[in-house]
Length: 356
Ligand code: NAP
Ligand code: ZN
Ligand code: ZN
Figure 1 (cartoon, rainbow, N blue to C red):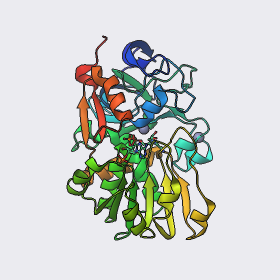
Figure 2: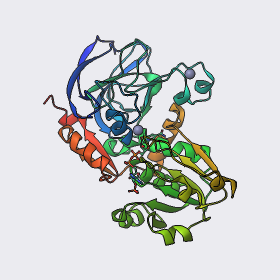
Figure 3: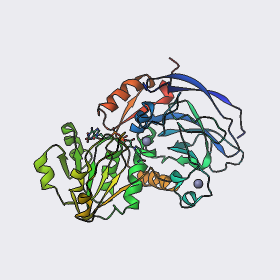
Figure 4: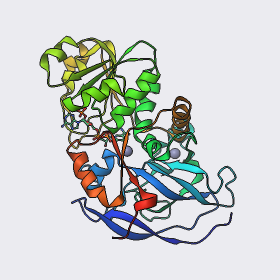
């Protein structure tokens, strides 16, 4: 398939840190020899999109077209691309470029490359801003294009591209896969519910620590959690102390780490993936007694993301989503802020992207 020129694309952008999203026209670069052009069909709404449109992390550049859980079909491939075909179902996650010659890239950890280009709110190699998946089309170097499993519904698979890999990667890297071990999940949101699904697939005993009583029934019933503990229930939290081997903490707001460290057995680990807007407090004694470990993790590399997608295809793992039209996006952001979604909003871009 040949390479065509620059195209005007419709997206929805925030113009300032009010975070209000509205139609916005911009151009996508011509499909280069190593590029794939995608017609976007679905895009998940990650809590990071909300942090970024509201400048929570203080690095936002406007106008900003968010979206890094992007699923679609190949519309065109560059002359050097021979492993993707027009019409194929593909995905793009949080990254669109890296150097491919540094130690991180050599180790399949493109997310730590000093030259990584994020899917949006980043500067592309040609100096132009990157714009994300709340848009009709996306052009991406083929090295960052993922094959979506054909057996999974693409809307429910879209959030795997960030929410899925962000919990899968630390679970694999930190050895949270030993059958029968006790796994704790803090914060049952988009990332959290995927961690529960992976933990069950790995054969772990799962305890969810949540602030939302309304999530208990589904957490036990549909997600199959073995225990559900309200973090506000002091007695139950006390009784759960020193019972958990490892925890993933996905909480998007400031919270106390010591309460969760107390849950860990000796040598237990807690891995932080949530990114609250301010630092968290931690008492050294909470880690000293019990030789506990606090770590962190950022999405996952390209090869591992493909491995995770293939794992989900094989094990029929998808996300629980609420599909919304583009025009609902600002309401969805308000609801996400209020912790009112089970468990991921996904925008039906293909059928509902409008210029008003
Ligand atoms: P989400 O769907 O909003 O889930 C966050 C969960 O945290 C909520 O469902 C809620 O769970 C809990 N929570 C929210 N406010 C809380 C509060 N004030 N106190 C205690 N718990 C609270 O968000 P998400 O999309 O999963 O993202 C979670 C965080 O991870 C965000 O900060 C996001 O930016 C970050 N993130 C990081 C990476 C990475 O690579 N490290 C990648 C993607 C996202 P309960 O109702 O169960 O309490
Ligand atoms: Zn994300
Ligand atoms: Zn690199």
